[in-house]
Image (cartoon, rainbow, N blue to C red; front, side, top):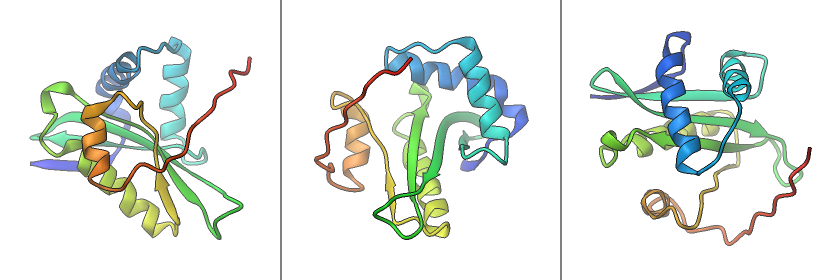
Length: 147
């Protein structure tokens, strides 16, 4: 049985395993302090960062984080799905789709006019799922690292 629910304090250890797996998948590094800060923000109702976990047969096997942003192009907001990760052992079982669908439902209820996310062009496994929702936007993202 697959259940998607809000992240809870008791999920911290498993969330940390999964979030580390996500960061490693993208061959990135963040400091231990940043992991802790991300966790604190997800649990802080006054901070604009939210998260869900997916449980498959009672075991947490996936996570997603999202936030809302104002836009000059939208009357209310956009919803940004920032992170999505499924334990490799649970892939192909509908976990990623269930997490996206949950964020989509929340975004619709909030009046968002767009749900969007990014992924690497080489992430073919994820793109197979994402392509089942919508075509690639055609946008190119640029990043300037700020210190």
